[in-house]
Image (cartoon, rainbow, N blue to C red):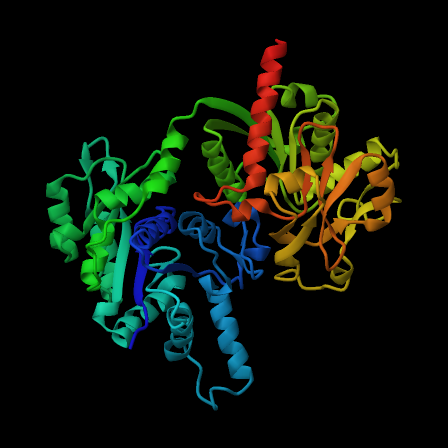
Length: 542
């Protein structure tokens, strides 16, 4: 007997169609009707988690409160639903096989031959049911990564087929997201790729209940009829998903297409309640009707792929709407910034965020950026490595500690103002071994940070190995860079700020991971407000 309804979202024809956004949008529409919803992502790659993946390969690594390094789609789930996810919300093939092999080594299969079916598929199903059997949710939406037909996706598709018979047809539903390409030479929308994609699902024993069709253009009734006929679905279950101006429009587009109503009808759930989307519409109204504009630089080493900073970009969207201003985000490679060109690159900006990252590449450019912002009183916001660069820059140029650095940048530096955390020094394995997840932080009363948060006790998510070296704390504070946030258990410096600067704040944690549509992160909101003030002050001088 199922304790929750299970919805699966599969993809066909091509990747990057937006399964995560469709899943999050459906979750939002169900949540807006009062249902309790969670979304999980099953990724078919063999890495245990995305923690060791290059951001160019996979975009950002999203971190949950419980310290799981996960796929960036979990960020979309949290931003849309405004509810935290956990380790249970992201499973990879690597984790599935690791669990099965560990059980086999312990002798838990009693000498049986361990096979893809039933052992791998049973482990996939166990993970599918984990959240549903908790009793906390009415709906569990499971996004299956990759494309139908991919070799690595086959065990997941087989597990989904089996779920239908485990939980019953009234508790099981499959949404297939596919592409309807437009051929400009023929001036036609083409359904054949979708037909083939659905055929592959049918060959695996799964009949999709709903088709969500991505397209650049409107899908006319004749095309919907053709899709319904050849894909064996009701015409009302052919849902159009046209390219949207912003991802935050998609829930309203899906509302117009009655996606949630189709789901609720098929799962025999009450659907008379109208969704309460007032706050969502208010956010969109502010987002689309800005009264001002600011130019903010994002200085990082992965700027060629904006998905590497996905949560930061979206946090700026939330903060921009809150301030009713459009944010013109300028991506600047830290490798291109030097002491000679700082003025040319940075002077036109209203504020700069120095992004997180790992390794020495581009780090000197970040340090030069901080120096220029500090000396020219331009709003600076540093996250993780960005905060560490601020400490290094201050030590070098204000304290005159020659060669001050991080041991990540220079192992033999005379002044390691940033050093490897003590518990990290014996770590050999790379994956899942950093300081990960939510930790408490005490903010100094009267500091900028405490005024921004409106409280002195906070909790934020971390992902790092290196930290502020407390041996230098006293002399750095004496010179004017204040440590205004401290972890109460370890004494780790979490926040630094310059008192006599209009906005100079660096944080060791990742505030962008907790910014949502309905709860924009206060640090981003106030940083954007500071950039607006800086812009106004500049224009009044001119």
